[in-house]
Image 1 (tube, rainbow over the protein chains, first blue to last red):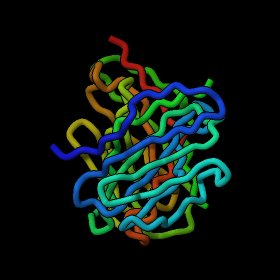
Image 2 (cartoon, one colour; image 1 turned 90 degrees about the vertical axis):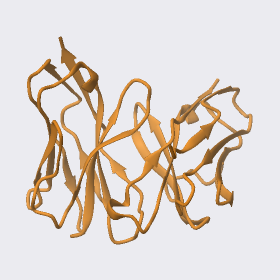
Image 3 (cartoon, rainbow over the protein chains, first blue to last red; image 1 turned 180 degrees about the vertical axis):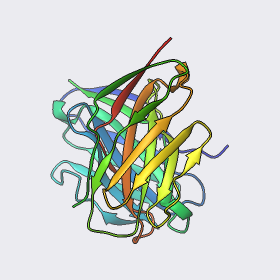
Image 4 (cartoon, rainbow over the protein chains, first blue to last red; image 1 turned 30 degrees about the vertical axis):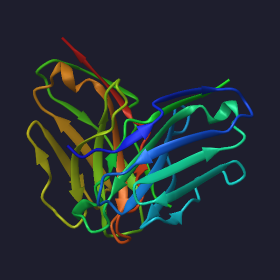
Length: 115
Length: 116
């Protein structure tokens, strides 16, 4: 049963610390998305990659956030330094640009708490 | 830029009854996809139903159906014979179809409560 995996599932850290979230997309998918969910803003697209190249990161705060795909099986989202306002659930999703409906498959999310 | 609006923060329905969740969107594009996602307390995002903008026929998936009104930019979700397991947050989402797999724009969500 193919699924998107994310690690860690939960992360509690202190303000100023570096946070790295990892995502393993479904094998064969060529597009990876990062979303953030907060009570105030809802679900927001942060960035996405196609064939490991960044296509759009306009939703991401550039000064402290960075997203990369070191290889086709791993996507990372880093926050350095972290701030309390970064507390949220971060979702990774993967899809295939050749699929009908552009369906995206979501991972279980990483719940980040910055104290 | 496209926007998605869900005007009902919360809805309540009796078990076995029918409920309709509203969604409107704004876009200048003519080719796009619309989705309804369900998010139970586990936080997992589950695709409920999807619709291509060029298809006039409304999508159905078992007890779930949509009323897609392209001219009005409206995309409501009807859940028939509501079950306790339907209780969740429901998100309406839009995706432009012209760029391959593009990012989703979500509404703020509707919290659906099922009364036993």
